[in-house]
Length: 567
Image 1 (tube, helix red, strand yellow):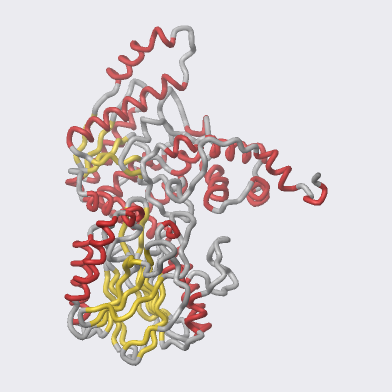
Image 2: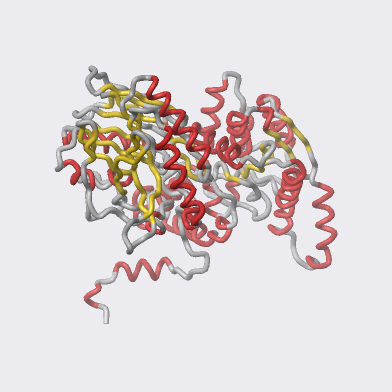
């Protein structure tokens, strides 16, 4: 039997566009001799459809779309798609997250998802009812262990994969007990740094445990914050990967179950994957929203705006990117010249708009209200907000998508100005720690041939340039120190004592950084959606109350108490 995996890039809510993609690849698979073609999870609606599923017209239109796909798939071809379907029972949530087997104009069989993730970015219990049984799909004499995404992530593996979010049921093990000929998983599994290796290990373990081939078809593309890398694959019964789809682009794999196999090894680079993910995230945000003329980036001469601009240029092309430098009286010469050099290197449109008139006007307007006070952060931030107003004015006037340039390190500790550098439609680097931003800059230059980012931008000490001689290290620890703390606290969910023990840093310093993170949730909540590239990004997947009173020292003391001794 020949089986194809159709790794497509669906758009949430675009039922007609997604239908056309499905039928396009079904025809391509048939032309290549496939008997069965497999598509990703919820490919009919795009993932995640969120509260579109509460709209009765959307649900009905989705079912009509499934019917139309079934009616138009090539004759004699089996097609597996992912779609929400009504729950036939009178109890429970209204829908199931289903894998549907289509053939000859109708739905031949269906499998419902068992494990409904409700953590980080996922909230499937909101709409879906879980399957109450697991069963084999028999098709043309082949026993298919068909299941949906999360159902493969609760295997009995020494390392575990749920970071504490485990389930009582192991659907793959239950299917394995029914003697399938092969496993098929349809997924909408998001990208995060290192996810490729995790999938490798997990699927290899399943194959070796059950001695069956495993086919994984994953969505590719980006929907708002969430980026999907594809990374679809086929593993032989011994765990060897024998077919590999491209990452970060649509692809169609074909596997002949009777043909000899060879190992398929795809060279990977953490920083290369990060780069490709961000480029895809920018491109799909721009193209899938479909409401912007060009992308707009405020250029400071610093590393963050340079990397953001270079990524945007690769994603959209230089003709669709505009860079704007907005010097103030205290801006260094390099903030303008480095920005101009970057724009020339990238071939983008470039504007210089000094903000002195706006800053002077605000100083004059606020003179009476500020009388008798010493100049400080409020006056400094007027510069950032003047730049924010300028960029938003250009965005409004010309229909440009403003890209916010702040990195994760700054967002974490609140080293950003609300309604200034936080303005934008999407935050490109908000899940990228500062030390990774530098690695990205070097990677971009290595890929570009002639360097795109000026070396002076990479070499100069980072500065917000809101007062004379200012450097980030006046306020923050060195970024390698800060990021060592932030990665452990935010991404690895480690607490004070563990961070101090692992880093060897001063406890008071670590405690102060954690305090800054905790106190600046209100700023992050007002920031644009940010592209997610780690297992724990700011935004939809990290739900921390703004109004709270959490005393770390009291909490640590309570946690350390002997519960028996409490009254």
